[in-house]
Length: 91
Image: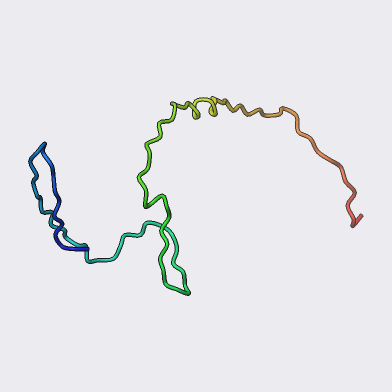
Protein backbone atom coordinates (compact mmCIF):
# COMPACT_ATOMS: atom_id res chain seq x y z
CA UNK A 1 0.00 0.00 0.00
CA UNK A 2 1.41 3.41 -0.88
CA UNK A 3 2.29 6.00 1.78
CA UNK A 4 0.27 8.73 0.02
CA UNK A 5 -3.06 8.43 -1.77
CA UNK A 6 -4.10 11.04 -4.33
CA UNK A 7 -7.86 11.47 -4.57
CA UNK A 8 -9.81 13.52 -7.10
CA UNK A 9 -12.87 15.39 -5.85
CA UNK A 10 -15.30 17.05 -8.24
CA UNK A 11 -17.18 20.23 -7.21
CA UNK A 12 -19.55 20.79 -10.11
CA UNK A 13 -17.25 21.65 -13.05
CA UNK A 14 -14.19 22.11 -10.84
CA UNK A 15 -11.76 19.24 -10.11
CA UNK A 16 -9.64 19.22 -6.94
CA UNK A 17 -6.85 16.77 -6.04
CA UNK A 18 -6.43 15.82 -2.37
CA UNK A 19 -3.45 13.98 -0.85
CA UNK A 20 -4.08 11.57 2.04
CA UNK A 21 -1.00 10.51 4.02
CA UNK A 22 -1.14 7.00 5.50
CA UNK A 23 0.62 6.04 8.74
CA UNK A 24 1.21 2.29 8.90
CA UNK A 25 0.88 0.44 12.21
CA UNK A 26 4.04 -1.45 13.15
CA UNK A 27 3.10 -3.79 15.96
CA UNK A 28 1.25 -6.99 16.74
CA UNK A 29 -2.45 -7.16 16.02
CA UNK A 30 -4.81 -7.16 18.96
CA UNK A 31 -6.33 -10.54 19.82
CA UNK A 32 -9.75 -10.56 18.22
CA UNK A 33 -10.54 -14.24 18.67
CA UNK A 34 -10.06 -17.05 16.20
CA UNK A 35 -7.41 -19.69 15.75
CA UNK A 36 -4.02 -20.30 14.16
CA UNK A 37 -3.49 -23.18 11.73
CA UNK A 38 -0.51 -25.10 13.16
CA UNK A 39 0.49 -26.51 9.74
CA UNK A 40 0.53 -23.29 7.72
CA UNK A 41 0.81 -20.67 10.49
CA UNK A 42 -2.09 -18.65 9.04
CA UNK A 43 -4.19 -16.81 11.64
CA UNK A 44 -7.95 -16.90 11.10
CA UNK A 45 -10.06 -14.30 12.95
CA UNK A 46 -13.73 -14.63 13.82
CA UNK A 47 -16.10 -12.86 11.45
CA UNK A 48 -17.71 -10.96 14.34
CA UNK A 49 -14.38 -9.24 15.02
CA UNK A 50 -14.02 -8.18 11.38
CA UNK A 51 -17.50 -6.78 10.77
CA UNK A 52 -19.49 -3.92 12.24
CA UNK A 53 -21.99 -5.05 14.82
CA UNK A 54 -25.60 -3.89 14.71
CA UNK A 55 -26.95 -2.46 17.94
CA UNK A 56 -29.74 -4.70 19.17
CA UNK A 57 -32.41 -3.16 21.33
CA UNK A 58 -34.20 -5.61 23.59
CA UNK A 59 -37.40 -4.95 25.44
CA UNK A 60 -37.12 -4.35 29.16
CA UNK A 61 -37.32 -7.47 31.27
CA UNK A 62 -38.31 -7.96 34.87
CA UNK A 63 -36.83 -11.40 35.49
CA UNK A 64 -35.56 -10.87 39.01
CA UNK A 65 -38.90 -9.62 40.26
CA UNK A 66 -40.63 -12.71 38.87
CA UNK A 67 -38.14 -15.21 40.28
CA UNK A 68 -37.83 -13.96 43.87
CA UNK A 69 -40.30 -14.12 46.70
CA UNK A 70 -40.23 -13.34 50.42
CA UNK A 71 -40.04 -16.31 52.78
CA UNK A 72 -40.40 -16.58 56.53
CA UNK A 73 -38.75 -19.38 58.48
CA UNK A 74 -40.33 -20.58 61.68
CA UNK A 75 -38.82 -23.15 63.99
CA UNK A 76 -40.87 -25.30 66.32
CA UNK A 77 -39.79 -27.05 69.48
CA UNK A 78 -41.51 -30.31 70.37
CA UNK A 79 -42.72 -30.45 73.96
CA UNK A 80 -42.52 -34.24 74.07
CA UNK A 81 -39.32 -36.24 73.60
CA UNK A 82 -39.27 -39.46 71.65
CA UNK A 83 -37.07 -42.48 72.15
CA UNK A 84 -36.64 -45.99 70.81
CA UNK A 85 -35.99 -49.07 72.94
CA UNK A 86 -33.47 -51.58 71.60
CA UNK A 87 -31.88 -54.73 72.97
CA UNK A 88 -28.24 -54.53 73.97
CA UNK A 89 -26.04 -57.24 72.47
CA UNK A 90 -24.08 -57.82 75.73
CA UNK A 91 -27.18 -58.74 77.85
